[in-house]
Amino acid sequence: MQEYADTSFLVSLYVFDANTSAASAHAKAWKRPPLLPFTPFSAFELNNTLRRVLRTKADLTVAAKRIRSDIASGIYASAPLQGYRLIEEADRISRAVATKHRARALDVLHLANAKISGARVLLSFDNGQRAAALDLGLTVAP
Image (cartoon, rainbow, N blue to C red; front, side, top):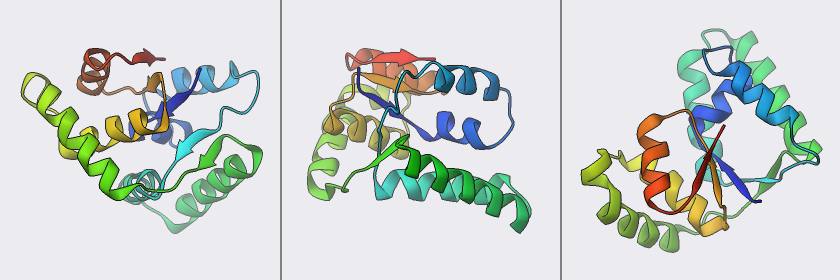
């Protein structure tokens, strides 16, 4: 089943936090590389978040090396950013979930990316994001 990982899940793979154990356990359960859709938007938000939480250049270098290794091993599948389609889908999703779930714009863009990529499962530790995904018919994990 096609999965899409938002930044809360991805960061937990590369930075020790309260969700690292759950993220690692989920990743270890993959029988084959999942080819998670990885658009320029996904890369930007992941890198920006890592720059905010990792304080040293050495830590950033280690994280970047691990990400490159995961790209090479097939954890991620490079996917083009479908700008116009992404914004149209995000606007549709925003109308459906923004008020009820107080969804932020970047969260809505992740949901739109997931839907455009054909994902059926959203990997996220953000409770609001998970609730919005369920309302959109996605399954959530871990």
